Image (cartoon, rainbow, N blue to C red; front, top):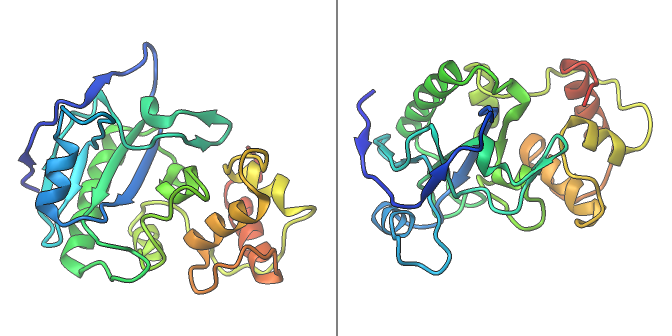
Length: 229
């Protein structure tokens, strides 16, 4: 795929001996031109960036090279680690609000192609490390939103999706969510952690309640990853 280079000054070296093992998907909440302007603005008090921006028509823009840190994740936690910018790739997808607006098919087709390339270059990004911003920053972030087609991506080999097993988790939900990857319910209320899980894996009902369907979906996913942390 043809990638348009639009370099951002907002980047830093990767930590020494670090391995890129997380792919974080976002929505921009701004139109394309405004998104590029913000992410490429080196004069802002709080500078931000991402490795890629994906337009609604599927055109990918490269802002930061993958061997550099882009500033997209902020305060974040996944699988026992914090401050994920140092070990992640960030993709901003143009959408004004992923809870309200669908992602166009050409954009998703281009996203699949882009992500496949990223995963080939960074084999340490295992399936459950393909996450949304809301997964790694519960309560603080909601992107890429409830209309994001996670199941479509998983069917294309990008990320995880429940396979329809019905065995619920064995034990309490919060330790199980932490085993899968979510932050411990200390700084973030437990209900918000459950909502983050539902936002990704059961977007039709995001209420923070550990009901039987939520427990079964979590059990299904833990079975897929062997139940390990």
